[in-house]
Length: 504
Image 1 (cartoon, rainbow, N blue to C red):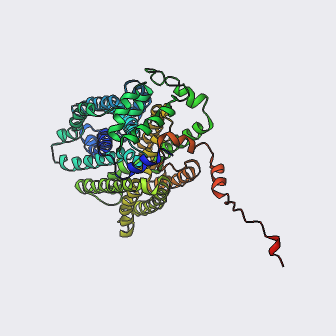
Image 2: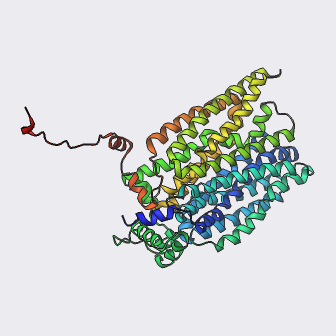
Image 3: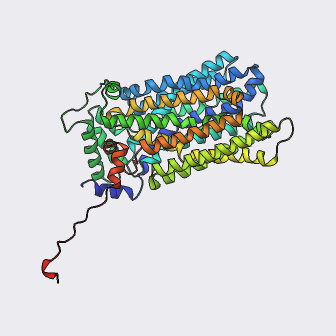
């Protein structure tokens, strides 16, 4: 009970220093979002300039995520070794190199190489940003701060769309290269600026440096008492109380064995929840909509290049606004209500989008009914809004907070790898998919998969709102059926014994 008073004080206002650190740590995600957004428009010009075919366009779109897989799988071990802060700086340096290569590429091979290098940096960024935010934040604001990488990705996508619109006016040979090369500027600033941030207190404890961890906690907590309590909780989670303190400099050795060879029942349930939520995120079709939105708008009847790019800016604005809304709600409403409501909107939007695009496609070469065109365009925006208020930010917030301390970095690393595999699969096969089953059929398929995602989340992912990181493993100590029985169990009320003397 000694934790209740500090927690109450801490909930009165968010610690500004913790918020600032999380924002700076999440800026790396803007670079990833910018690359995704700018590539959607740049591909129109690359195809014209370098005379690429549809297969090359698909490879260019998806190779970033294939290489991000390499980055994410190594990022967890690297962050356990060199720390969370230096890993963010390393990610920025890698992305800097990739942006320079893409901006100066004379041919398709060099462009592909630069995108591969940037992809490795994206893998590092996706893994480390939410983990750093989760380990800095208090329980009361953790959902909002671990959602910051998603808002930064969306903001980056929006900047990419705006860059497409304005840089499209440059000569063809310079336009797309400038679009892709601009990512080098913030990368260079971030690589140096992030070193002014504090290290994660939880990483410091795992390195046997609790004194340094306490100094950081006193900056990110509102009271010294709260900092002391959080340090004790972290030390207990790290095994100090049982005399099983981690070996400094171990670099997270043995973590994969504990996760995959000898997991305890709670750890097994955590891995299913965390990996599953990443698996289903891109099966909702978000990558197809974001990356190929220009083609979708073209299929819906928006003809000129400027109109298409302006419409994609609208998609970026919608995504950003609704993720900001999610950040305000996630610690008040909870993860489960937002996520399940988001999936309901996704299913409805994708079904209507599939219907509208099917009618448009079957009307060719004649003009499609105006209601079908309006439906297709509107549901692109409602889909993006539905995804952005739940499935988008909560995937990263939830998956970064459920792992035990000893498994967090490398568990998050595997989760990001799964996320990137699914992202790459959708990016590299969407054109082929919609040519095989029509573009409307592709979105009907995504709607069906979103229903499966809702069933999975309902049964496998318990609520974590307001729980300290060190207590979340306890949430997974029971399976779904046990939790349901516990909630359904009626309260037993003891009635007084009847007084025999009172009987007539």
